[in-house]
Image (cartoon, helix red, strand yellow):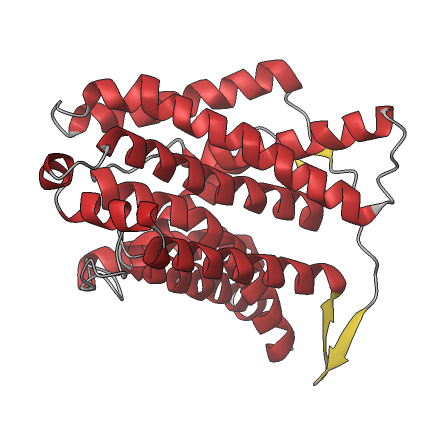
Length: 302
């Protein structure tokens, strides 16, 4: 029982970590909590469904799993990245020099707008995600890890490793870290700050889109409201790890997933969503900088 819940928690936590990375990267660069990020995740899930529908019209069956999953990832990533960059350009960039409350209100407004836009354009009911993974899995220690759980964990770990390498080993990653340290000085030494911020939003949105597809496949259903709760939980994960710290977002997501799975199994499944918010309250009271919030900018923060 315990091992099974740990596996479930790691699976869920890896998805939270992917979404939390978008929160922490944006905050690390422009000190903004992008509350519309959960809706970008939701749009990624819808883009994955639509792309699979187009594949079916072209004669490619969803049972052709490698092609279907690759196309859904690509479509979701491109669409969500475009939405993320557009939101930054239209809703946040004009308010960059405004009081900090103004972009925060703008972020909440964008979140509400995107929710209603998807509800009106795609309907308020649940949509079935037309992808099914093989039911086979691996059994050990009275627990079972399915093929889909292995896939979710592998994709999440690969993406987090790729992001870490990107931040620490590329010129754009260096520019992102420099902008995070001192935006004005970064501009003075020739870094295109606007481009760096746009790339940050694009990468964070792409990671959220992949998480949206993974969750859609995992639960089999998608609706316009999934981004709200997932976004709040991912924000909690980012705060738990240390907002602005990339490793912290990864750690926070995994820990939150484990806490939620264990709490649902051993305390009450009816209150599983409440555990995340109890964690948020506790972190803000006892360690507001988060578990890894003291990291410096030399690769630990963006």
